[in-house]
Image 1 (cartoon, helix red, strand yellow):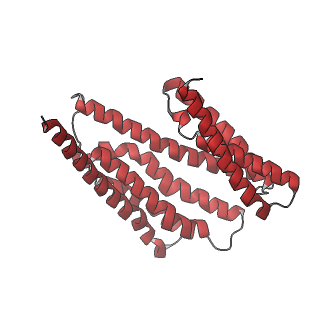
Image 2 (cartoon, one colour):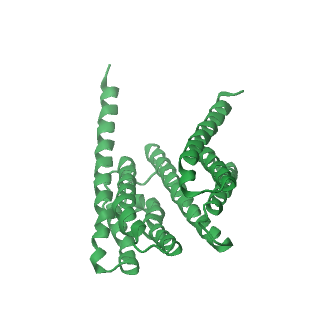
Length: 262
């Protein structure tokens, strides 16, 4: 058996074991039927195995990339639908499709993040080969590949979370009022800014784009009192971008120092 295949199976096994542990510990608290509990645990095992392969579908390119990504999503969606049904999170097909659409949104968010990284790596190679015309004013072109990620993070994701709150008839908007603005939004913005800074240096338009993209959500989901949410994405994005740029300069100096050694 090839080493790559063994590593492939090992990731499935470890992910499945982790999913099994989560299912065994968690499902007894929310499910009292043995049959439903078994199916929910099975769904957790499947989702764990798919999580173990989370980067595998993105390892190839072209047609193989599309086939692997589609197959991975279909399997993940099937196990997720089983979990939704067994946990009684949806009353009908429309409810299941709603949860599946949120899964697709998350999948696209991760996929776009990886695609952005690839795009910028190719741009760096072109620059090293003298094929790139150089930085644009305010590095707008260098920032552009991150715009789809920002749109998903700052617009589609909060809308999806608000949809969940409406489905479960939550009295308090915990997801959009607490979890998203104070945890998901700043952490994701910081990581995205760090990624951009490591590849392209300081890009001042990136935190501005985060601010502008989230601004409509303030008035759509909240009111003027939530304007500070925009800074919950813009400031971490700026900090991450600067830290990434500093890391880039430090790495460049380190590499230059190695070249100067006899």
